Image (cartoon, rainbow, N blue to C red; front, top):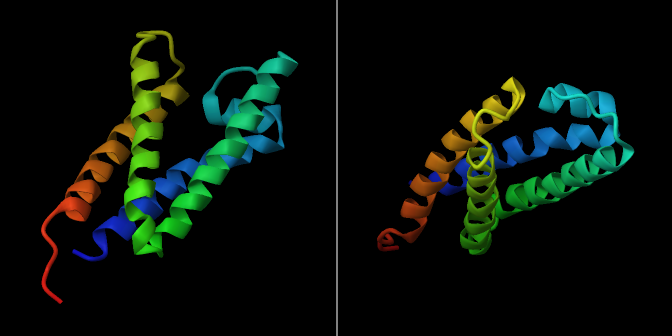
Length: 127
């Protein structure tokens, strides 16, 4: 059981690190999200989003190896994933197939995070 939380944090970190590729430019953003990025302001916002996801993903990787950080990392990842799901569900039928894939991946991530949180908060084994 002691590997559940670190493993989940690493898996969710990988999910958050994938959008980091979008920092390179609009072609990568279009591949990631399945929508044309023609507005320079939209490109800037999405590239900044990629940077922030990279920071969160990197933090989750570090936290996976620092048990004292597990709780904070689980909260940060859960807020990110659940927040995106709420926002996506507020636009029914308005998302691209690529975003639908992100929603499905985030649903799996949320389930994993709930399991990891239960393990993290559950009874501690005697040492």
